[in-house]
Length: 215
Image (cartoon, helix red, strand yellow):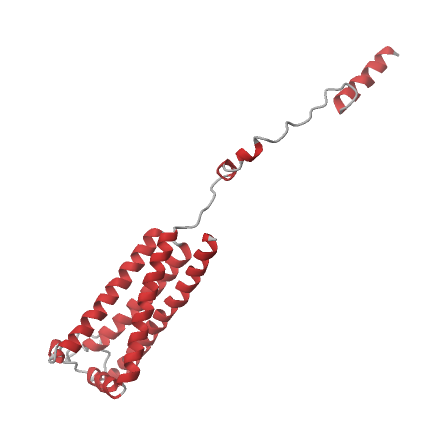
C-alpha cells in the first residue's frame, strides 16, 4: 500500500513539476526574442563588455528566472524519481526561495505606490512594454500568476509527503532478503534421508564390485 501511494505521489510530482519547467522554457524563449530585438536595434548583443549602452537588466533577469525554473524542474524530477531525502530537501529549499522571491516582489508592487522607482531604468524598453501588457491584460496575468504559485505550493507539499514516506526499500544481498523469512522455516519437517543399503548409486557400485570378487 505504501509503495503504491509513493508511486502515485512521484508521478503527480513529476507532472506538477513539468508545469514549472514549461514556464521556465517560456521565459527563456521570451528572453531570446528580447535579445534578438536588442541586437536589431543596437547592432550588438547585450552581453558585449565593450558596449556603450547600459546593460539591459530586464533581459538578464528574465533569462535568469527561466534558467532557475528549469534547474528547479530538473532537481524536482531527480528527487521524485529517487525519493532521496537530500534531493528532496534541496528541491524544497529551491521552491521555498522562489516563493519568497515572488512574495517579496508582489508585496512591494501592491503596497508600495512608488514601486517603479525600486527598479533601475531599462535601456531596452522591454520593462515598459511588459508593464503595459500586464495592465492591459491584468485578469489573464493575475490568473496565470496565481496558477503558477499554486503549482509551486503543490509541488512543495508533494515533496514533503514523499519525504515523510521515505525512500524505496532495496535488498542488497540474499542473506538480507531471506532473514525475514527464516522463522517460516522453523516449523518445516526435517528432510527424509534413506539409510538403506539397496538404494543409491554408491550402494549399487559396491554391490557390483562384491559380486565380481565372489565370482
